[in-house]
Image 1 (tube, rainbow, N blue to C red):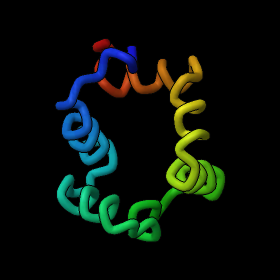
Image 2 (image 1 turned 180 degrees about the horizontal axis):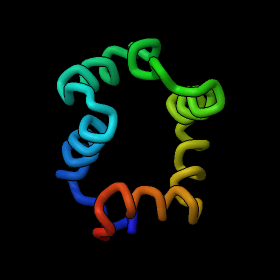
Image 3 (image 1 turned 135 degrees about the vertical axis):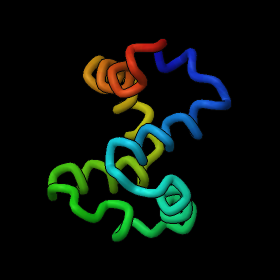
Length: 83
């Protein structure tokens, strides 16, 4: 479950994102840190991009989003079913 995530998970999630997208983890991290959303969201469909931009712009929305059963299930599958 998301509440069980520890301090090592951001790097793990970054590695999984890189593996899923075929992108360099260091480049993804630089894009996140610099706020380079154009490169970060390149290739996303418009609806996914709009949601991702809203999550980054509104921490309250992100918190609500990450508490939904659908997102929790998705993240669990992304992390290989581990809790």
